[in-house]
Image 1 (cartoon, rainbow, N blue to C red):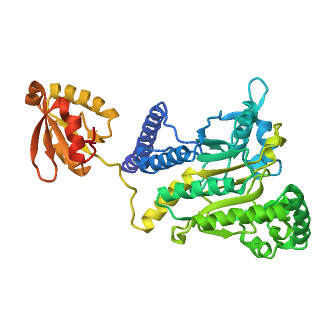
Image 2: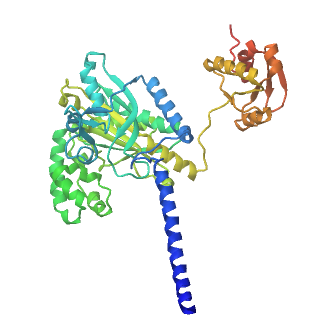
Image 3: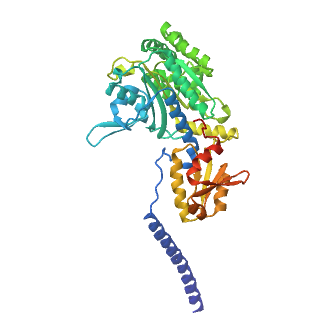
Length: 468
């Protein structure tokens, strides 16, 4: 009997542990099942959010682009995200990575084949033709800012939905148009404090390029065994893209390849030399790059890209680029119209800025705050909100926080923003129709009539024009 009891005890003990484990597991599964009812969502691969903490990069970029567009007299163009698929196939060209591999194309519910724009030059050409802009005084200058879409391999600074700012000039064949766009792009990066240089080349006319392509194909065929798999395909589909390969094994072959400059005619060389003369006069740093061809089929003559000059940042990708496309408007059904354009990648620019700032212990300039408006009590808050709205259309830059009730906390916030003045409104000021203006450096305070607040602040800030 003792032995039997001992066996039963052991058996009973062995049974209890699994039951407990099963219950715990069941409980966890139940909890997990409940949690699944509150499903959270993540970004699609290759997509990204632009958060408020990055506004310090995005706002200066937009301000610079808008300012440059206004100064150089470009009109804003907005086109739909969706266009006919054939628009990009015809403009960008079959055999390009953009059309063959990266473009988001699908059949709409009515059977129309559409594509999410992978770039905007083709859409700008479509708009130029469709709206009869050739009848207007030339040149037509357009600029845009918006999202593009490519099913690319996600990596640093490269996303499947990305943003570009671009400038296009229609109806001008002069090399000054090429130089103008390079200057604007250079100034865009200069405004951001990012040092860049231009890599530039000429790919001539289609006839010159065809003769060069034959020579290039003959050369690469003799080196076929040294090429990567992608370049072997390019040798058949799009030989000019052989010069765009970044694979290490192809670099020695590319360095010894024939140079297109030797195949250009007198007119093409003359156009290119004039562009370079403009860059010399403007003091814009550039490198001649005989392997630069860009990845789109519509280019003729000048092509160029922008790279960070500070090699310590590790930024290898082009921040943007462009070139001349004198034949595209006619090929798209319009009248013969010379044109040139540039597009700059904004995510890549933000990445380059972050890397450059980190390496050089530099921060993005903060927006200045002229005055902080602090309030005490509900009545003061209502008056403050009214004053905040009234100050909106002045050039006095203010800050405020309606949700902090402590004057000490509000003044600490004003100090952290380096606001030179604080405007204080309490119950007494509400009754008297006044405000207190406090000099944040000296602590000196002055009582001012609410109606004279803007005038007094402008005088203190040196923004008031006393000329009558």
